[in-house]
Image (cartoon, rainbow, N blue to C red; front, side):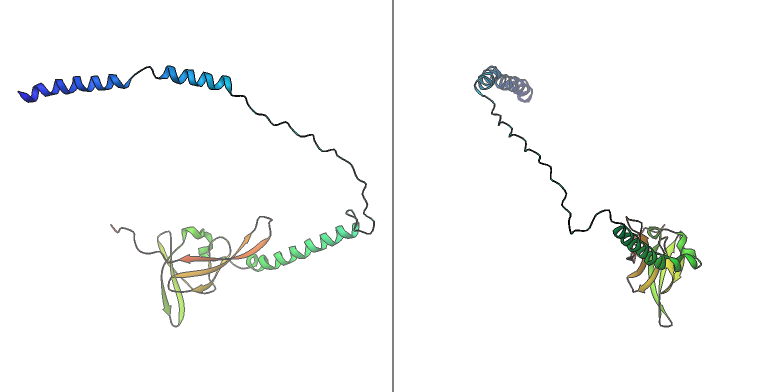
Length: 185
């Protein structure tokens, strides 16, 4: 019986406490904000005068003329020599027969193991749920990736890719061993 009497008393006490929290304190706040707006003056720093532009004559006496035909031919010769270097880098790759694993992007190729076959390091790679053996000199991926090193934990590749200027450059890539953490069913 005592328990039933306590519940209404607790509810009434909660309502009385909450009614004491609400008040008209926002009138004081509004008055303070109005006073602050009336007394505060914004400070604006004046802009400085713009600098005067004084044109100057070109005095390129004794210097290289920017529109000299010799300068243009030197730049074209330098560009053609760089193109020749790029052509020598990619030409052998274009002339050889493609290997089957070059049809797959490198992120779809997984190294799943390695072994030593008659003294030759061999890596086991998985592509589309098929297992392949690759050795030094084989190619992987779509960027002319030639295998240059095989260890127990990775396969090192030399790839030939185009940089942002369109030039062919070499870069080294590593294909790491994938641990068998997949759940077997």
